[in-house]
Image (cartoon, rainbow, N blue to C red):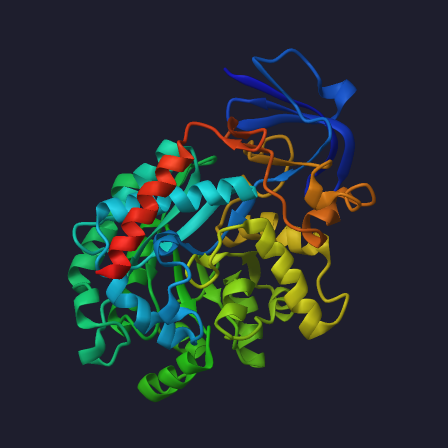
Length: 451
């Protein structure tokens, strides 16, 4: 039994059922979960490891519900800087098709490092291209070595240009192989238990890159094994036109037609649902990964997250592809969500605490987790802390330390604990040679783009 005491935090935003903010408080951890949280004079006790959190605001580890780790290799590629989603994808497909197992491994580590330093402790990644011997196993091993809580999507594309899809034919896989490999990955890696560090998700890419048959077979396979399903949906108007022309349905109607609705399904984006569809998505308790930076970067639109929440849909936050957002900073994403929805809905459209709740408890709900996302006894010990005396928070944290995390320039995390283990201390990522990792990452990125 390993015990950790995180003591004397200036403030702890728990996001628990009472939405408490505690002051001069401590958290006691036993192994991988929280044993006690409350006033320092009640919780403090001898522990194997003591972490001084004075001068910090602590929050639950942020939960990233949609990402493409491999796209850290193609950030800011000139051909994709000023185009919409479909043209952006067409510019990137040939580059991504040159990736190999090392590229997947290194880009996964870079993305996780960036996420950890932003305050993220759990992420779902959606890689849907596995060229040149790359496998989802490469990501799972990298995440495990870094001690990161990971929902690994076995993504896929199966419909190439010659069959009416968007990706080139050489970038897609055989559907029988996709299903066989999906079963292998579930059986080898999926952990359905509490505090699981690895879960597997089945994730055909999009309506314009997979077939109806693959979507339906994926549903049967996922529900047989009890794993969740994820895909892109209703991201752009181009996608809507494609679905209407190819299927005679809107994207949401298409998802309903292939049985992709329920509390075991979540969609990335959901920018363009119709009003009646919002109600149905809520009735089915579908999840939505809201990705404001990517949606603004590609001029896709603003997802109606408040109506979705009101209807009963589960809403979390995602940084999306590192080449359509160009960073992997979860706290920055929360700020972007606040700004986007105030622009479209007024100054009270989304508060700072609502944005943080979406980034924590909301994300946990989207991923189907009841053991992460808020701080309370029995919850996983995923805890992050930010210094209140940092330059980005100067003049802001003294008034409201929790809201300052969203309103002020997003700081790097000073403290990150995942599953009860310290991963970032005093702003430094432990156990990772970041300069060497970045050098190798840049070399691979250069080679990929130059061909």
